[in-house]
Length: 144
Image (cartoon, rainbow, N blue to C red):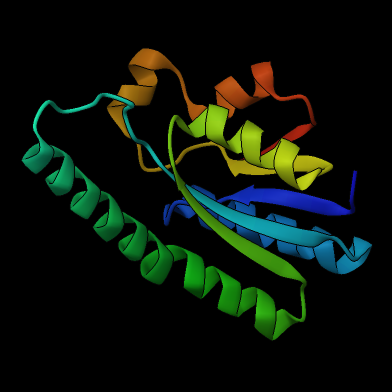
C-alpha cells in the first residue's frame, strides 16, 4: 500500500469539497492524490455495428468532456499547490470502478463527496458514497 488517496470528482459541489479536503490532507501527509472521474456506463451491448460505433463515439466524447471540464482543472489546482497527483477517467458502475481503481493503485483511502450529480436516482437506489462505505476494502471518507 502506498501513501496515496483516491479522490472521486464529478464536477459537483460535493466533488469539489472532496478534492479540497483531500488536498489539504495531502499537503500535511505528503500523499499522492489519484483524481478520478467515473462516467456511469452500462455493459449493455447493441446489436448492430453501426450502433456500437455510435456508442463508442459517445463514450469518447464523454471522456473528453470529463477530462477537460472536471479532471484537468482539478489537476491544475493540485499542480499549483505542489501536490503529487495522477488523473484517471473511466466508464463503469461508479462504486465498483472506484474500488477496482483503489486496488490497482494501492491507495490507503477513498475520498468522495456525500452528494454528486446523480440527483433523484440516488434517493431511490442509494448513493455511490453509501455503496463505497459498505463495500470498499479501504477506509472511505465521505465529505459533506
